[in-house]
Image 1: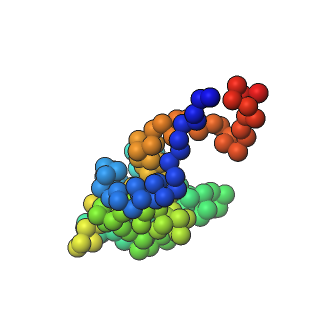
Image 2 (image 1 turned 60 degrees about the vertical axis):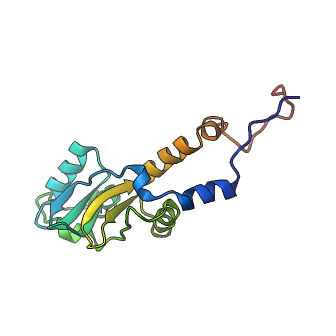
Image 3 (image 1 turned 90 degrees about the vertical axis):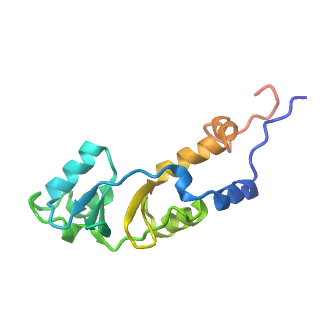
Length: 165
């Protein structure tokens, strides 16, 4: 009788996330724009950089974040000029984390707020990077490659016998 590959227990995955620091994701450098930029400039920056968001900064400090969701929820289908200032459409004072925080903490922040991006700052509040939910998923896939690659498309549907029948 063949043994099934073992899956990581929830405790193992939770422990790994609690031990892992955000810096291990190799956070990307965010696109930082000035408070005075326009919607067109922000959207074009996101398109060119293939980024789901831009940070609105004053110097090296974050004042807001503008995301794909903002485009969909605040602009799409509305009579808004792309020459409009970005500031009214951004989310001011976004939730931030430090690269020294645990991945577990980052996931909890993102889950509670429904965020797909989390800006990172240092102790002085200066922009250090940004992580996305995709970065976390890719990290987990690297951490547990066998388990991730062996998950069936519909894990709740299993075979009744060892030969797959």
